[in-house]
Image (cartoon, rainbow, N blue to C red; front, side, top):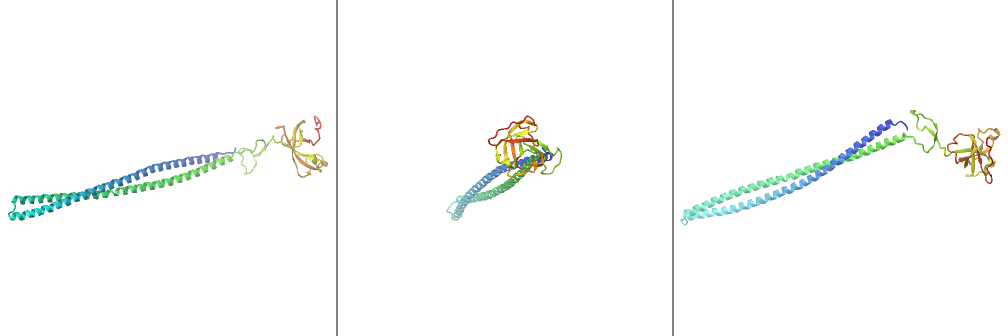
Length: 319
């Protein structure tokens, strides 16, 4: 695994940014909940205030109408009392009624005038109450402005939560990128095998694409062999074969023909004798069935292929 100190630091920063952004989202969501409750209460207050104000206006209008009716009744009575006084005055001058009756008519007119004055004061008071009640109708408008203010705060909170969610998504993307970069620092073998060579040491700086190690799957070892061109016609895929390691020639290793080259070639240069090197041969691969861990790449060995109708020849105990 390569050095990942800086990557871990970036991952920690990204993780902290994710937690911070998620906290902002939760805070914005809480604010929206609170503002929704405030908005509901404000709307209820507006409706209640409007209903109360309208009720007080209606009540004041009713009182004003009643006061005006009483005033009209009092004025009518005063008019009648005035006529009675004038009539009594004329009769008194003609000595048709007593002075006491004339004075009683004057007193009745004066009393009725006082009733009219009181009724007028009641009308003025009722009008004042109506004006005050009508002024209270402005309170719902004030409350409506409060509702509008809460709605504005709610819109701002929704914008804040959208921004916080976007920030959280960016932070999560940065965190995933940091985790992916940290995973890239770990060199994972594509298969289970044995390290054959190591071309880089711990702490060494290498270029991208530089091989670090060479792995060999010792469970899938094959022998690269060459068959003379004149005998390749007897060889078939999957035919039984044996491989003899130079390190242990008395112990055959079971194998089979895995591949046959489609074209002939000259014998490899590492063939000992010159007359053999100039011959045309066909390359084959003999896949070993056993000897896991014993046969290793680069070890010299011989191979035998069992052709149709043949038997395994006896193998000498030493070469």
